[in-house]
Length: 157
Image (tube, rainbow, N blue to C red; front, side, top):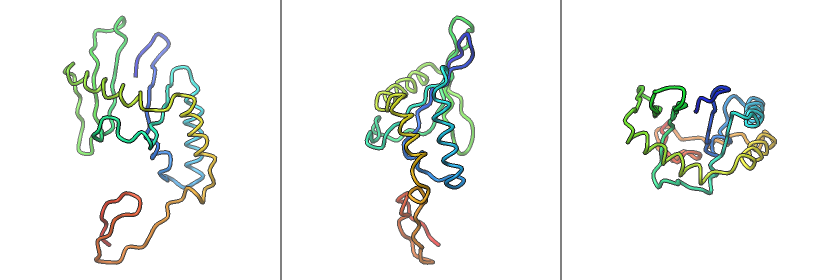
């Protein structure tokens, strides 16, 4: 996110898989995806999608993170990275750390779809039929560990 003269600028890269993850039911998902596509047309919002076919651009999965960049002419505040964590907050201010995250973001951005292709993909997913987007679940036998059909992780009933 960059602060500019007219306000903040938001740059977001979403993994394509999150467009297909059902949250709140088909009607809610369709509305959320359409809203994302609409917001991506704003002049201060850049929304891109990292397609599944891109694999893992850095060779190692990288969790969610936020880079806060400030307008160098308006403030003396350095950039800060906030890697999101399940157990707490972490703010990285060391410029070497910030540089690593900037380079990671640039690599992910290069592998992502451009703005228009991303918006078209989001709208296409939003327009798919609800029954095609519902999670299909297989029952898990009690006491038996099996691979989760969607996430590949073992689950025990």
